[in-house]
Length: 475
Image 1 (cartoon, rainbow, N blue to C red):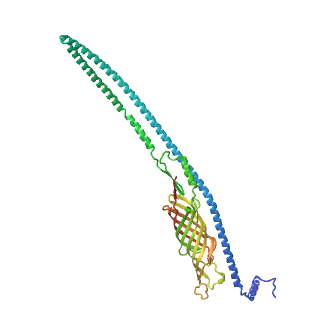
Image 2 (tube, rainbow, N blue to C red):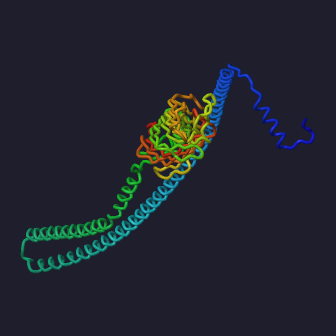
Image 3 (cartoon, rainbow, N blue to C red):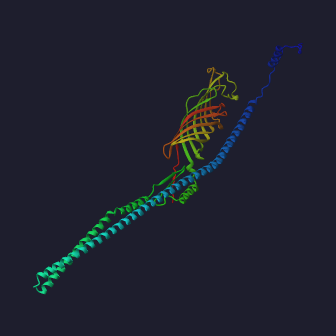
């Protein structure tokens, strides 16, 4: 009989070991079916939980999107109104400056015309005074000549009277008449020549001063040049183009610009003008935890972009993906219902075809000319289409090995991966852009038949299509 109060640890351990070897329990044949039912029940609960998680994520993103749409739409409206006010103020300032310049030019032209008129009046007054002086001189000269002629005639008469006393009275009378006629004609000729000379001088003086009238012609030409049509002024905005033209004076009035801005603000931008489509391809490299990246897979994507604001964009779509990766036993969950393999598991090779459904927000970091730099953040949902697994053991020649391959589909895994990317976009024209977008997908939940945390990376090469923009012109 052993003294149980004074027993060694080794004897105590041996006693329990012997008792455990001697005891046998009866096996319950319905244990495995019950265990499988519990596992299926847990899978159903997990799928139900995944569904509600994805629904909650969609609800959160939709509410955030609606709130951000309203907020950024209001912000964009305020920015646009401020820009339009600034443009209107600039246009009004330019119009005032042009009016002031035109007024100054008109005043200068009027002053030049007045000065030319004064000069012309002064010149004409001087010419008139000179002509009057010349006329007075010519009249005095003519009077002197007439007096001299009369004196000569008297002398001639006296001589003829003295020499021809014997002639008849009739001849004397005839001679006197002839002499008087000659004197009258000579006086008339002299007066005509003097008058013609005076008129020619006045005409010459007036013609010399005629270039003053050319000032009026040049002034009229300058006025006509100022009244020519002004160049068209064009203002560009984000979604529309407003063209302001002016073909008559004034150029653009303040009321016209306000009417145009009101038309722009009240114009509802269509939803289709905010949409864009991305068609892209990328190589795919995947791994789980401690393993290295497997062989290259591929991704084909069709992404829909909805522009919430100038810099924020909501993105979703579908990606057809092929992922190739390797997993070690510590990263791969072996199914319990398969039991323990006769040879230790060494490695698992996976080939998975799946649909990738991303939901993300993109933010524009920088824009310079046709180039844009942006980043995206969101979540990814996986829908497993076909999974193939090959199992490699330490002793692949063991005949008791049962599971060497498995193929099937484990269904939908919602919001199990965080999506991050950084992209560069270059616009080719109004309809097309090209993008280069490196990405990484960080796991937060286990996916697939082996419940692995799958990390994925690659670079998308995209072609982005834009809707055509419309031009707005004032009526």
